[in-house]
Image (cartoon, rainbow, N blue to C red; front, side, top):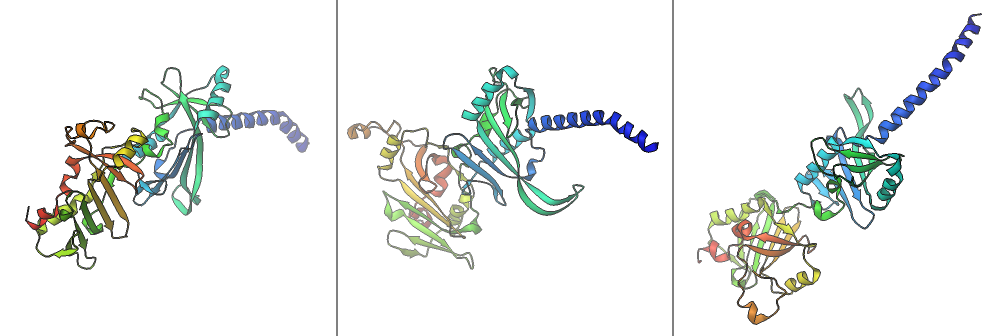
Length: 353
């Protein structure tokens, strides 16, 4: 009799249980589809961003900060803005059904793919005892264009059926610029970031005044300096130690003003590179990594004016100059105000200036 009552009770409650489970699955699915934020950005280890063309970047967290494409230092402020965006992002509304198909088509054609990796643990007890860390793909989202009022951004979680309009509370604008797939948007403007203890040697070669070119070698054993005249490779025995020390300690933070790769035509850049160089600055660190800068004069007027007689009447720019950095990959604009402290000639250190 008891078994019969139990069976009847199960039959009565089964539909309600099935309905509840279906509702719970639907709710969970909707939550996954609309969950674009990263709660713990400190655990993010890597971010991959790519568009439908040829642009892509990999941002990876290292012990020395975020690294771009396993090679370049990144602009810390830009990376922090991205992490802040991913943490604060909210859903404003689902895309209306009438616009759903068009939005998905746009996302598939011009959307930016973003893969977010985080550190996880194979054993995690109560979020307190964690063992066996590993990197996992935490989330993949597609970032589209802005809404017609430019106050929202279309996004889609990979595998989801419905796109959403996202935003950041208190921010008026769209979010896609924060997810740029172009390497130039992430590169640090810092050329030199070396403490005195990191430097093995520095050389400065002037094109117009080769007799003022020099190299400083630092002994790894006792930190002593050796000054060489690059014009004849003679060792200089008498020099101003304090001035030379100021020179070497000036490489802790030297930055360029702007990158010109995509702001100037290749023809114009090539024409500048055909001109005689201004100076070459080379730093080798204690791990045998080389930072090389090849500088060129900047005219006060555009270089397209090729009349040499007219060129003589045009003064050089006294505030800025051009340079090749990153193994010749980047053509940049620099300020004398920033670099003058490392551009003194040899005679400045020997006291013959």
